[in-house]
Length: 399
Ligand code: NAD
Image 1 (cartoon, rainbow, N blue to C red):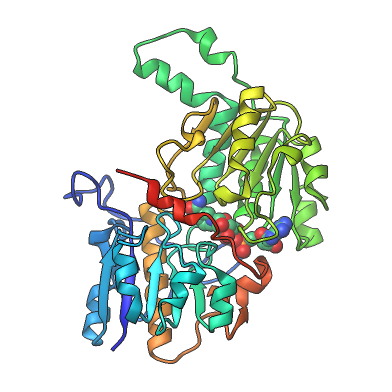
Image 2: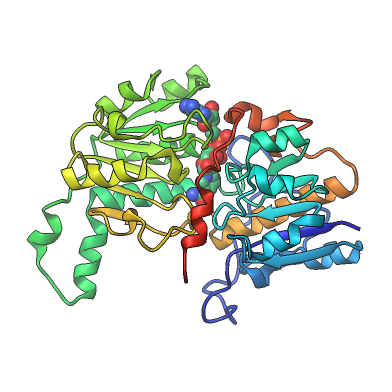
């Protein structure tokens, strides 16, 4: 029997919904590169319902309990008195989602002697100290591709919202106003702008493809260059440095994972190389950016807008400056946890658990760390080391 601790975000304040806005989800067979969607033997949930919050339990309870395992589900994850901390001592598997991350620091891993696997129900495993996982021989797996397209859609929405000044204009209507000049004094067309993606992996490439029909000029930076045919098809300009990309772009979208090489890549110094009035969209990870440097760049006008859904730590303390800085379009971390995405990553988590318990290999593309080293997508997209430093500040969030 294994104990699985699953950290999920809180249920809606009004309780689990009795009905949903829509009755079904579109049926998808494959992701754009041909990878199949998750293939668990079965699922015990209704796709299109809330699975990522505590009551949804990622649809795992029946499967795990019927196989003799113990499932603990909690949203209490930060601070020494958290349920996560109390349950770690005999946990074999810890599951959490990046939206409400269980920060699996070296200290926590050390206090979990039976821990064998950490699963990210979603994409992005920077909330686990990957160095510590490698050193302890703990497997880290995530559900690659499950919400990449969800996030790319969000990037398009945020880009248009900032450039066209949507959020302030919407708020003016809600408040009963009609002053058009106030709305449009910061409103532009995206058409003709130079748009750059930092990374052209699953999300970055999708963003570039989705934005292409707006007749923008596209740029990218990635440590793995795209095939020439894709560069030609999208008329992409490849850059080999952040400075070269930000010097020419009006919109910059961050789409790389957080790891020691990318931590704080956007800082006071690198922001000086942006065009004045650029828009920065970050749905990748909060810690790619220096928090105070972003707020200062919005105050000074160096950036015309900043939007995204990722913060550090999460949940962000009430006094986090990104809640109150000018010209931002921030939301809580939601882009990868639409009801559509939840169905995919709940199924993918179940697939990973089935493989683990049946001693079958976990798909290579789901692996971040295995056998003491970066593996699968981890070897392609991450660098060794730790990016969880400072996560204890999440305990300062108060509901
Ligand atoms: P991916 O592995 O397909 O792509 C990552 C890309 O980043 C790769 O092409 C890799 O070469 C590139 N990269 C890595 N380090 C780099 C560096 N130093 N410089 C330039 N490029 C670098 O992953 P993906 O599906 O596109 O997801 C990317 C990230 O987006 C995730 O790791 C996660 O942090 C974030 N994400 C956020 C959400 C959300 O809800 N906001 C959801 C999913 C993923």
